[in-house]
Length: 116
Picture 1 (cartoon, rainbow, N blue to C red):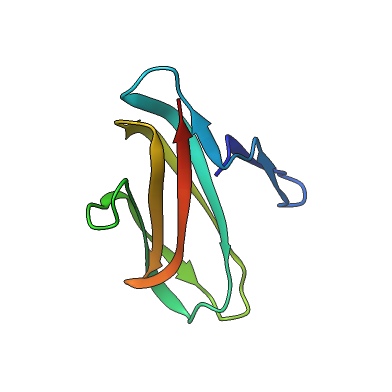
Picture 2: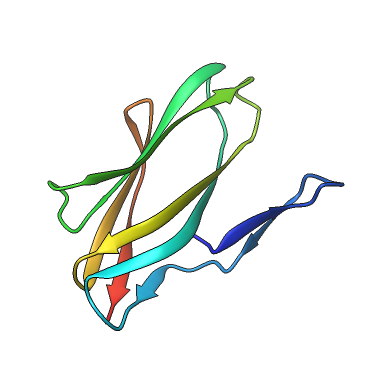
């Protein structure tokens, strides 16, 4: 998670700006205006795939945040995905679970702590 990603037009290099792993709010419910979730995937079979990101305060009550398709040329190809998310609502402080899936298969499960 970060504030932004810059892609150098001359080299294609990605610069990740403002990396963070928690959020602090003064009032709740908190609406976080904008963040970017940058990820690099490898070892993905050729073809069209679907990325899905969900989040929730309870593992049984996950809300979809993002669903998108992406292409893989071959398993050796590095796929950089820049996912922009806006106006994320956090009803209360606590730890929120984040699940990332590719083609309905779990890729990553992590947490985001929201402080008051």
